[in-house]
Image (tube, rainbow, N blue to C red):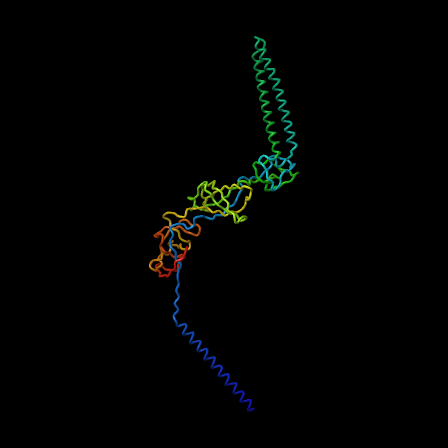
Amino acid sequence: MHLYSVLRLGLHVALITGMGFLLSQCGNSSAEKSRMDEAPVEEEIRYEAIRVAASRPASELNLPGELESYYETDLYPRVSSYVKALHVDIGDQVRKGQVLAELEAPELTANLTEAYSKVKAAEAVYGASKGIFLRVLRTSRTLGAISPVDLETARTKAISDSLGVVAANAHYSSVQQLVSYLKITAPFTGVITDRRLSPGAFVGPGGQNGVPMLKIKQLDRLRLRIAVPEAYLGDIRRGNPVQFSVRSFPNQTFTGRINRIANSVRPETRSELVEIDFQNKGGKLKPGMFASVRLPVSSSREGSLYVPKSAVISTLDQTFVQKVVAGKAVRVSVQKGDDSAGQMQIFGDLKAGDVILKTASEDLADRAPVKTQLVSR
């Protein structure tokens, strides 16, 4: 029992000593933390600033565009008929005037034969009446042999029958034209890009008239359409060379020329449609490809100032930039101009070389002191 009491007393003393040590350490940490909190911490905030530029920094625009065929069309049948034969398929190169498909319509062939027979009949009737008129005319030269009424009747009959021949020929020509529609020919040189029907299909009114038989596109000449922002329309000139690239050939640059300008600004996009012609020798590029166009533009505009969009703030009261004057951020009212390529054209009490905050802040009061560092645009 005596040994047990001694051990218990030693354990009790050790616990008290350990707790004292921990309390002393906590006290030291608290004191140290208190001294750190009391020490002044000086934080310095520096705002990025830039110089106002008197010209647009970009000398060219990168605009998206899409290549299109110079000519492309869907070929439909013009008369009710059946597809007799198709001489081409997808991917075939064709020449202008080449027969692409043949149709058959037996009733049209019968109508053509009938019209031809009517022409021959009209010609025979006219030949007879003409012969009668000529004989009457010769006989009338003998005084009293033919009355004037008979002569005039023969003349009228000959003229009437001649007009019958003209009418029969006109009808025959119209039927002949309809028969010619049974052969589908290529309207221009190009390539067949789609085929929808097969031999035996009924086409024309009452059939599959809503489906084109073939689609043909021109490949040796393409047009590239781009929408040019209104701010750069002064740089667009017909005939100017333009370079572009496509994803299929990332390491190559192609050159075309501006050939058509819409001369009308679209109000919804504030842009104008411009078409670039490209001579696609060898058919390397295909219609439907997306292109990235590099459009040269003037690098300066006299009397215009340009700043990043982030430097301009618009509130209910004013639109302003924050100009740095003697270490203070001074609000300068401006008016917005052209907005493109991440730059904003502004008009106001500023000049080229003035220093403004690159990213304006509405939290900064007017003439609030700021520390800045100049950065590139």
